[in-house]
Length: 97
Image (cartoon, rainbow, N blue to C red; front, side, top):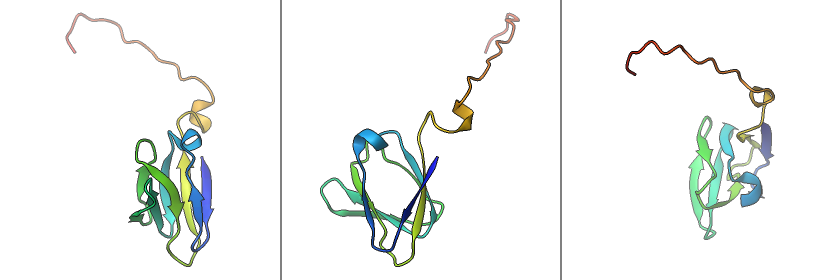
């Protein structure tokens, strides 16, 4: 997981190939989504989560004066993915599920 810091008025382009499976959570400030056609999208406040896949978002923008922070996570990152999980199969007792 990484943290994206957006200073007041800053804009960060969303490159589809790099962000296709990204999930973001606003941890500080407000972040506005810029839509594919360049129009302003919704403004998300603290604790708002959003997927970028299939949304048509082309940029993240900070509409405020203070620095906003967004935690970005993607599947396959982080310590939980570092080693495979063992799966234990339960015995078949003949019952139904």
